[in-house]
Image: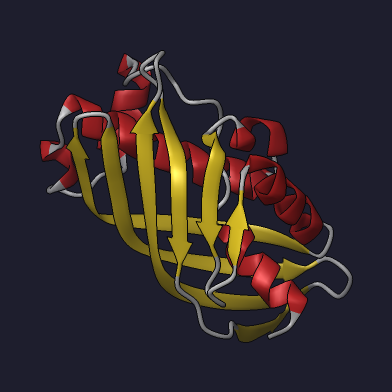
Length: 176
């Protein structure tokens, strides 16, 4: 599998900003405005998790490495569609930065289930991503599934402890 494709899929699941402590009123409105009917019935903690997912996607699309990395635990794990395991925030950061030298991501996540139990939570659903190769401007589209596992830290912030992406070869869209 080409390196650019592996990185593009990984990057697709990498953006969000520093977690908003719990669901601030403006954050809750943003989640509610972009939520399905089922998501509107989320608990306050599940809304906080949903906000981290939304931030992650926004930061990935904006290529904001510092804020994205603030959403991960130091020992976070990313399982790539290839099955390769990337261990630890420093390795995830290095991989993301390398991917971003090759492509520009544009990802959107659609949550199917967000569940919280104590200080652990998960969010799973589908994602759609358009990947633009920087050197050529070529665009590719992919649509797959994701799973994000969160842990609440001692300050009450929900952080990503593990991400899993499925993936297939993106379909070429042509040049813009």
